[in-house]
Length: 306
Ligand SMILES: Nc1nc2c(ncn2[C@@H]2O[C@H](COP(=O)(O)OP(=O)(O)OP(=O)(O)O)[C@@H](O)[C@H]2O)c(=O)[nH]1
Image (cartoon, rainbow, N blue to C red; front, side, top):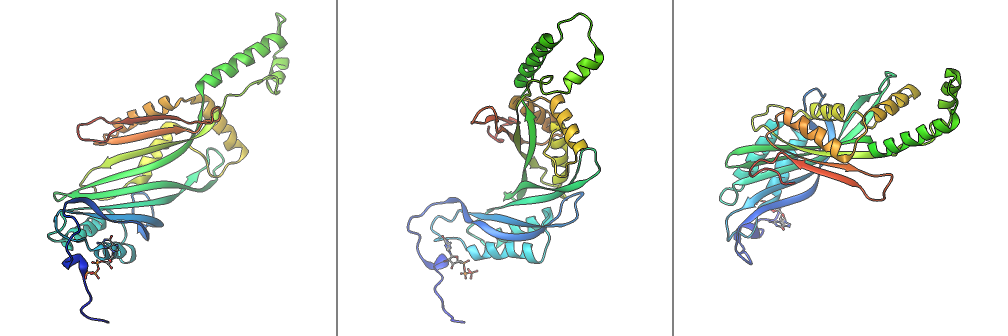
């Protein structure tokens, strides 16, 4: 190995002096084993971002390789949990003595979960996009967890309009005083009986929560499960006809504007007592070519902004 290689991060003058909020690397490819409550440790293929601040105004730069190697240790010799992330953040700062006093790691990955069908007892995989951001500042660690939950939303306005058309069709078809239950039952089973159907759409709830600084373990599954239970119509993995029929019933009984979904999730996050949260509901409309969107935050001072 060649000795006396120039090390400009340490020796060269900065072109322009000044403090920087974050310096580091993005899109780092990082497979690791993720630990979370109620989940067997699972290998995920993350994209990482790793940062420190640069508060020494005349330093040329930070030492990227030190951040990269601390992350690599997390990937190859450890499993990812709050304790190992805290160690990596600590290494980021101790390896930048005099340069940095804040550090941040962001992991973006898909978490595969086994999901049960609604009625048939089958199961299948569903992947959930997760972003886990961990920051240390003034020796205090904060964790933010973002998950995306995909669900189906049926438009309440469209449902009411469809019902009116069904009523009109009924009046036209059955104008006599006494009705035959058999005839009505048969007619309801035809396309003319249910002459209109409301539109529904694939929808995504993006939910970010701030976790307690002292958590001993992550708990992504509970957050996803409670969001899906509240929305009631998460997209399904394994589906037999009985599951599809139950899904149709759930959609019909949980008609939602994006405002309804946003209010439901907001109330849930309030009940679950998160110190802060941000949510965005996206209904990818099938009536319009544009989307319906609702955003809400807890609204605390210095907290997330809508
Ligand atoms: N600071 C900084 N480094 C960069 C940038 N782009 C590439 N690098 C490279 O990141 C590499 C690693 O930097 P260091 O961590 O200082 O590497 P090193 O000097 O071998 O490691 P130490 O001996 O631990 O300081 C260097 O080869 C830099 O050229 C950049 O925009 N800023």
